[in-house]
Amino acid sequence: MRKACLSLVVLPLLTACVGTIAKTAVDVVTLPVKVASAGVDAATTSQKEADEKRGRELRRQDEERGKQLRLAQERCSKGRQLPTDDCAAVLRR
Image 1 (spheres, rainbow, N blue to C red):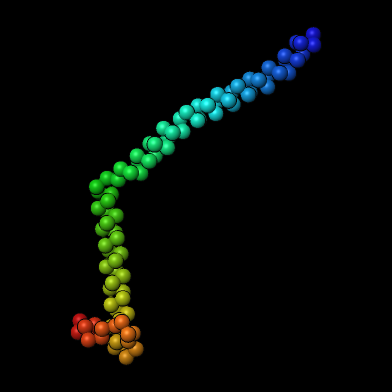
Image 2 (tube, helix red, strand yellow):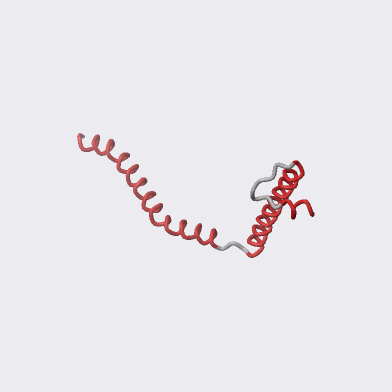
């Protein structure tokens, strides 16, 4: 009787432990595959995506140059130029 009661208490605990251990083992085994596939996805950027990214960067740089030119023109026209401003070239535009 005592063994039967003990097995009724221990059996669910063992089943839960075995299930957890099995799930952990599966996670450990599949983790390198998941990491490797994520790395491959990140490393394989298509040419189209690379071109789009480069285009965005060039547009951003062009906008920044235009902004700096407008600021330099404004400073030169007001007589508040910076030592780095080339007012002769800026006002000629």
